[in-house]
Each structure stands twice: as C-alpha cells, then as structure tokens.
Image (cartoon, rainbow over all chains, first blue to last red; front, side, top):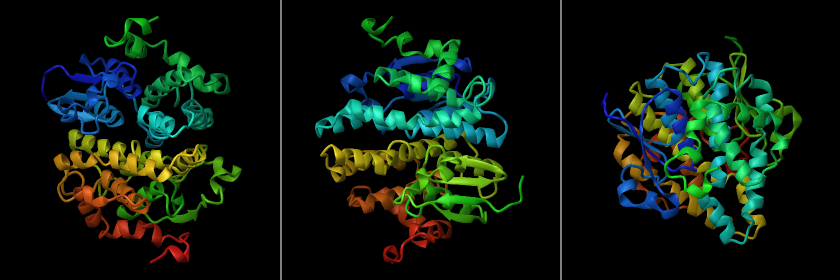
Length: 215
Length: 215
C-alpha cells in the first residue's frame, strides 16, 4: 500500500461525496480535499474524466488506486480499514444495512440528480413536484427502519446505511419535504448529526462551501 | 440456517430480479420462483408490501430471512455461499466490480423505472427520448470497461458487474438504443448470454413470461 495521503475529489453539496467524507472521518483516515466545482462543469473536463469516466464525484485516490462510485469506495474502506467497522458481522444484518444503502443511494438519490431535474424542467415538468414525489415515495424506508432500527438505522451501531441517510435528509429539506411524515428518519438523522464524523463531513464545513451558504 | 428451499419473488422482465436469478443459478442454489405481476400491481398489495416495504421486486426468502434490494441480496449470497465466487479476492478489484455495479444499478437503471417514465409522460415529456439520453450517458461505463475488462467486465472471471450488465443491455435494446456505439459492452453481453446461468435467468425462460413474448 502506498503511504501517500489519500486525495478525495469532492463537491461540498454532493451527497455521494458526503458519504465518503463521513467514512474517512469515522475511520480516522487523514485525507486531502480536492474540490470539483460541479456548477462550473469541472467534472466534465478531460483532466477529471480521465480519473472518473462517469464524470461524477467523488473519486478517491488511495493506496495507489483510483476509486469511483461512493458505495464501492465505502465497501473498499471497510475491507481495507476494518477498525471502527461500519458493517455488522452477521451476514443477515449486513444485508439489512446494504438494503437500506441501496434504497437510498439507488432508488432515491439518482432520481433527483441535477441532470434528471434539468430534463424534467426542459420538458415543462415541475421539478419540485417530481422531487417531492420521488423522495416521499423513497422514504418508505421509514417502514423498513421500523423493523431494523435501534439508535441508528440498523441496531445501535453506526453503519453504512447511516452514512447514506443523513445526506438524503439534508437534500430532502433543501427541496422542502415535510419531514414530520417521517419521524423515525428524522430522529435518526438528528442523532447522527450530533456525531463528530458527520459534523465534520457536513457541506457547510468544506473548504469549497461559499461563505453565503454557511450558517 | 434453515434447510427450506429459498423462494424468489420475481417478475420475469425486471432486471433487478434477473440479476438475482443469475446469481442463484451461478451458485447452483435451487429455488422456488414466485411471480409478482408488476403490471397488475401485485407489488403494492399488503401481502407483498409486508415482506417488501419498498414494493419492488425481487425479494428473496432464504436461511429463514427475508432479503430485499438486488445488490444487497447478491452480496449476501456471495458472503454465505462463497463457492463459485462473483467477487475477486483483491480489494481494489472488488472496488472495480462494485463501481461498475453502482454505475449500472444506481446511475442508469433507476432513471428508467416505470414510475419515472410515467411521470415524464404525464408532464408531456417524451419518455423514449429520456431513456435514450440516460442510457447513452450511463453507458460511459464503456470507457471504464476499456480499463478493467478481459473476457468479462473485470478481468476474465464472471463477477457481480456482469450480472448487472446483461439485463441493462437487454433493456437498452427494448428501448431501441443503438448498441454499435458501445462495442465493448455489446461484446461482453454477447459472451455472457452464452453462459448457462445467464440463459436460464433470461426473462423468456421464466414461468411468468407470456407466450407471445417468447421466441
């Protein structure tokens, strides 16, 4: 393994980047933050698309490797840095965690990517209505959490599911979703937002967050 | 572990179900097929939503557990039935596989779920145009495959990435995508479609495939 400091290519508001920032913080992995300005289209420039052909954030350079796709990165960090685990040991509980991860990272978040919203707007659709519909539907995770949660999404330990939940709740609030319909999601998100690894990973605490967006 | 035969709740044309069918076949796990007719809305009925709160297929009952979300199910099967592995041993190669899995299962397939298309149609958008846009964009996996592929998506062994690729290519053809733009994807899909586990998992070979859709 390379001893060089890992480099995270990230955008402050990207929820996929946020998941990875939280994981790095949780596991105590020191890293260099390299901003990718999505609004300026930096992700489409050749320099970046060379390392990330999907032209999305995050990309993590670590151990001499270049990794893309947040969930793949989280699994890699869990396998190579098993201290402060983010997956339970039991295969069924791991499946419960990963099911929640996919329900958020696969079934909700891609539906409100900026390019999806741009398309809906270009056809005369109402992007806010769409986002409210797809997040509200996606938050049927509330029913699953009623079966799996303890203090956090699955039991009483922080897992990869929690790393996905908090950024999704943040996005939902930005879109004006009424979170009182999802008391369990909201309660867990509140508890997570008190933890140092999550606080430090918050968009407002990144170097590329504009001054006017900070509290 | 329970010795009862696993039950897969599946819809023949669902690409998420197809991924799991291929995995079960690949690992030689005998299972009972339980059709869920998505067109009739069987997934929304209480009996089904009790076991799958997301109201989607597939659901796998195995080892006395109820599992949802195809990617979580694949990881569970890999962890509990490591014979005929579908993930490499090396953590970096595993990350390459999982990155492709997410690029397909997260960044392409959810964008053309039936409910997304219904919304786009309801706002006067052209759903075909949208699907062509999002699959064509998503198939930038071609560039990643140029770096990772051998005979299959990552090297010369079948992995979870291949289980996701073939159903996506099938969907793409249904939507009339010009696959000549993606020669590597098409070549790998052709090779995969010759393998027994993939053939047996094909929509046309499921008991709920209507006669008129069979070749």
